[in-house]
Image (cartoon, rainbow, N blue to C red; front, side, top):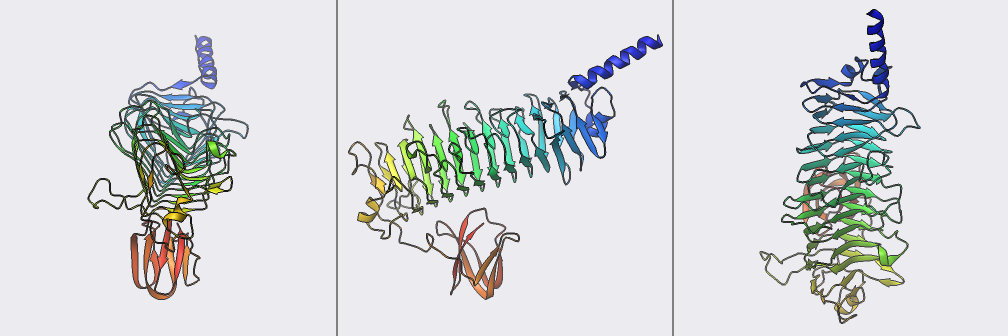
Length: 483
C-alpha cells in the first residue's frame, strides 16, 4: 500500500510539472504564494521570484490575486487563463517577466466567463487578451518586448463585443504587435486615454499603434495618447474602422493625441460619426509610396455615410494633410451658420508643409461631396483665396469631385511658427511653466482657445492639461510648449 501511494504521488508530481494546472472553482482566492505551496501547480519560489513553467487556469468562481512586489516569471508558451476573476492590482508594483532570455511566454488570457482589473504591473514579453463578460480597467501598466505568442491582434487584444474596456496611463514599448487592437467584428466601449507608445508593431505589418472598431451603440474615446512612430513603412498611428458596416449609433472621439513619424496619422474607414479634434499630426509620411499612405488624417467610406467633424488639429510634414475618400458629411470648419447650429465648426486646423512629388496638398477632396473647410490656417504665406487654392485639390482641379468651401480662412497667427522665448521655460518633469519675472500669462490650445491663465506669477502648473501643443503668451514674450 505504501509503495502504491508513493507511486501515485510521484505520478501526480510528474503531471504537475508537465501539464496545465486548473483550480477547482471552489470560490478560492489564489496568490502566487499559494500556488507555489502546491506541488501540483509546478509553481516554484526562489530568491523572491515565482517561476511558472506550465500554463495555469483559474476556474470560474475562483480568483487570482497578485500581491504587492510579486515577481512572476513565465516559461515559454505559458498562458495564465482566467475563467473566474483576476485581481491583478498590487498596491505599488507587480511584475510578469519571462523565465529566460530565450523563452516567449503568452501572457494573461480572459475567457468569456471572466472579469477583473489590472493595475500597476510591468509586463515584459507577456500580453493580455480580453474575452471577459464584464467591464475591465487596465491602468498604469508598462508593456515591453511583448511578442505575438498570445495573439497577433495587439499587446492588449479586445475580443469581447459590447463590453467596456478602459486602458489608461499605460506604456507600450518595443512590442511585436500593435499596442491596442481588436477584430473587425468586435464593437466595445473603448476608453483609451493618456497612453504612451514609444514603439509598437516592430514586425512592420499593416497595423497601426491603435487599431479598433467602432463601438456600435457605445461611444469610443481615444484621447491624450502620445505615439512616437519608428518611421516604419507600414505602421500607422490610429485607425478606427467599421468594415462590416455594423449599426453605429454613438460617436467616435479622437482628441488631443500627439502622433509623429508613422505611415499615417489618423484613419477612419466605413460608416461612423467621428470627432477628430486638437490632435498633433507631424511627419506621418513613411510609406515610400504617397498613393498608399502618408495622410495626417484620412477619411474613407465607400458607403458614403461617414460623418466627420474635424477641428483644432496641427497637421504638418505629411504627404497629405487631410484626404477625403467617399464619406457623407465631412466638416473641417464651417462658420457661415449660427454657433448653435449642428453644422457649426470653428475649424482652427493648422496646415504646414504637407507635400509629395514637389507639390503641396493640405486637403484632397477625392469625393463628389461638398466639403466645408472654413476658418483654417493653410500652408501658404498669404491666407487669400488664390494662394490657398494651390494647396487644395477639389472640383476646380477635377470636375467629378466635390467643391471645397475654404473661405474665409483664419487670419495668420503665431501658432504655426513660434520660437521658445528664454523668458518662458517649460519643465517636463514638473509640468510647470516658469517665468523669468512675475508676470501675467495666457495659455492657448492649438486651436486658439484659452485653456488656463496666471496673474503676477513666476510659475504656472499645466499638469491638469492633456498632452498636446500649447502657446504661452505674456505681454512681452511668446513660446510654444509641447506637453
